Image 1 (cartoon, rainbow, N blue to C red):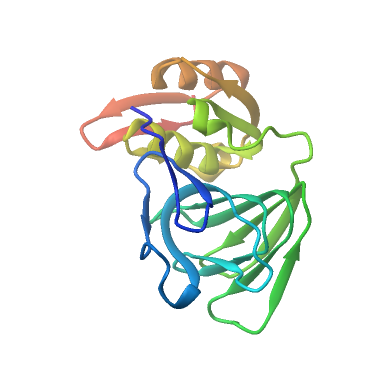
Image 2 (image 1 turned 90 degrees about the vertical axis):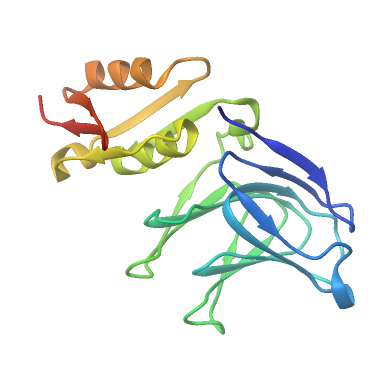
Length: 207
């Protein structure tokens, strides 16, 4: 489960890739253009180079990094792309509005909706950096839709939220060694819902 890959790129940038994630790039970088394509989730400690920004491309968002610690979460099929900035500076560009930059400050998470292109920024000043690298799953005031996506990626299981009321329930929690069943059991005790296993995945619905 949870295979985290760790490696160093030719410019000295350190990369951690989460479960079911892919990074596509040429090594060494061609023509000194530091650009990578990320599908899934990656944490980057980017080597500082003012003249050569580090570009992380995902299907709907382009993240321009100017020497920093940043986490980008962009799994295929997820409704949001999340960029968490811990150190340094990044600029985000919607691929449909390539001339409009969103500047991020350290301690911020930007949640970008792929469907309606809306941007929501929240504080993560309290958060430890990319705890998934140690096999930890952490939610901080996350809704059940977002939690289901994290659990799907971690446990390679489909989770279907049966109704909006359950999808909008919010949780804060920290899980390290618990199984998927144990996590769902604990969440369902905090706010009542039920879940059943089927051949198509786990269905979460009202009790």
